[in-house]
Length: 112
Image (cartoon, rainbow, N blue to C red; front, side, top):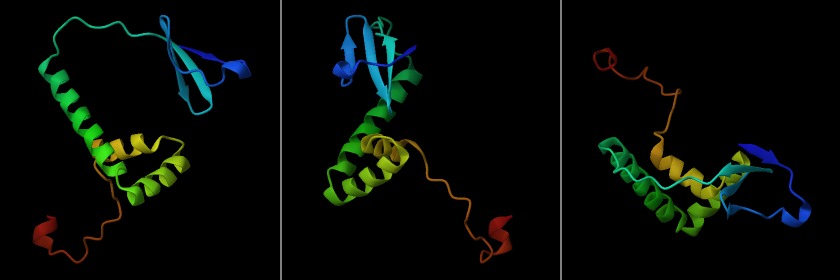
C-alpha cells in the first residue's frame, strides 16, 4: 500500500484506474492493487458474513432515508471524520456498549 501526495489537478481522483485502486482516507489518498475476482465458492462462514453485511447496508439505507435521522448521523459522522452511511451501518453491526448501568436497585438474586 502506498500513500501518495497528488498534484492539485488530480486531487479528486478516486476509484479504479487500470490495475490500481485509489482510495481516500480522510485527507490521504492510498493506492492499492485492484483485487482479483475469486473463483472459489463462498464458504458457509463467508456466506453468513455477506448476509450480515447485506442486512447492515439495508439498515443503513433505511436509517438515512429519514431526513431528521440523516442530519443527526451526518453531524455525528463529521465529528468522527467518517461518512454518515458508515456510521449508520456500524450501528447495525456493533452492539451498543454501556459501562454506566446502575444495578444497585436490582435485587441480589438477579445480579448474582
